[in-house]
Image (cartoon, rainbow, N blue to C red; front, side, top):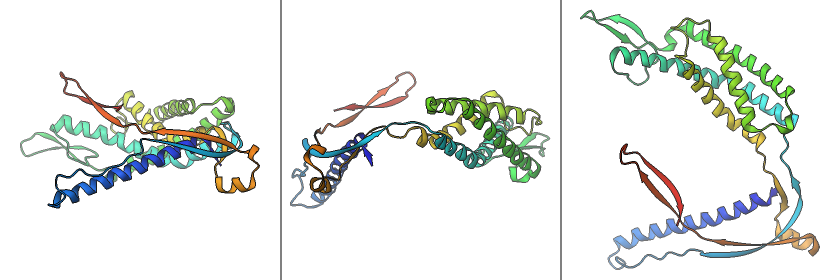
Length: 284
């Protein structure tokens, strides 16, 4: 089944694909014209559908309303349980790497690609320089991060399950759930790494912790989205060939759609003082 809005969107999308195919073919023809002495200078043919009117018989099958159920929430909790460990461990490492790169930069004035750790050595001129050490060379720290990941994920599953049980599921919104997830993650991570030695902790300050949790939350947002953003609308059956045979005329709804082509252009806004440019879409 498909909603009327989804069907209309697909219909317009098909017209856009037709326009795209026509533009690509005209561009291909222009190359052929350019290299052919007999065709050089001639206008390249290009056709567009300036306006189209479509008469579509539809059968209304019902109404789809977006209501988050306990089954939907269980899917979200499963996603947290399944996807969070890998995502969290990767972000913990990245936060640690950023901290180490800052130490290297502060000491040496430069950072090479893939620098993920640091030890300090005295060179031939008795000057202390930062030397790169990979996390794989520090197995005890790597083990700590894996242990912390498991501990954080266990607590997150418990806390988010409690959050779902204590809130009205039908009134829950995607952003509310995501914000609660990020806030809980910040609290759990802060407590977990609060006892780490300074050289072990992956966080420089609370801003780095906030950045890491927001990164994880932004990624998980798309896992949550498919549950919270189910399409609402009138459910229709647009299979016109079968309907004309099997449905009485009074069961069908005829919809006329008029599609008019409109070009889209870019407008460039340049900040003269900073040199920064921004591009905006505008209707032609």
